[in-house]
Length: 388
Image 1 (cartoon, rainbow, N blue to C red):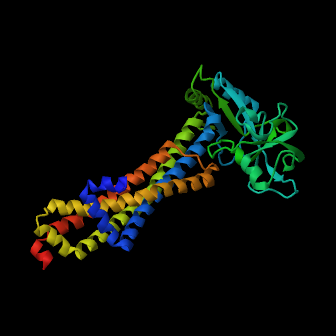
Image 2 (image 1 turned 180 degrees about the vertical axis):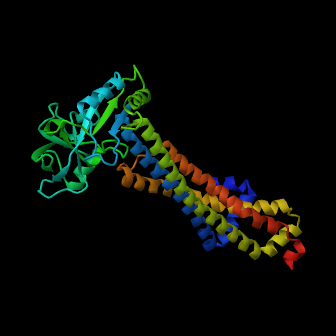
Image 3 (image 1 turned 90 degrees about the vertical axis):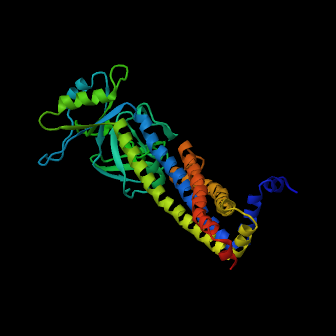
């Protein structure tokens, strides 16, 4: 006799429950399948959703302690507003010890290595991309004035690699060689590096800038204080600048991800509700088919509690089988989701694994609850009625 059999023999209710469940194989398999689907839905969405959220929020790490300043556009502004040196000096004074990084948005097209224009590409003028980014391939040159640096998404989508030539057409009409491909960033990156081509600011003919990034000296003042100082200095009766800190954007995006995750998990929870109905139906049918058997048990002295315990044990056993299959399948779905969403199949997070635990707990609880009513109904039937 195996160890498992010897252990289960110590609990006769479990042995009886296992025997009864195996008597209706197809019906039991469908009930187990319903639990598996619920566990996989909650676990898979939780794992993939958390990995994607953490991956996107990681983009803020390079911009910690920064604030982005953009001009507020108003109707009637000819060609939109930009920052001139006089306004930048006012912002610099308001920022105190904070460092100002000036950027420009390129107006025009980017032609790929084959000469065709690339859609969904933006170009940004900046003096030193290495201030915020690291290279995945190639090297960001110290003298950044004759080459361009491209984002990871831009390079992958358009088959661009280090050494290729890109031509900017429009505000700048010049050909550049790609010196580096940046590491992948998330959607929280204020410069949207993944889809960008970074061009040296020195290549622009104009003197104005479209966006400023303030890096606070946290030893002197926090970024929220710096941002408030800039707002107070620049915004009078009318707002002329918009100042958003990386921390506030991160919190907003975190809340959005949390809402989406909760919504998807709520939909997944419906599958467990369906599983509860399936198990209740399975146990009801089983109780009806075994009315005579239950009547005999009651007639020879089985208490109502013993009958309830037996049927609840059968329902719980279905739940345990469901989560035993569903948990590893959920991990497998998580591996696939991580690969598709963040490119790393092992990007499991503690919270993501916690969701699998939640799926397992709710799977067993759902089965137990689903078996209560059929058990109560069977236990309260009089032995005479059951045998009749």
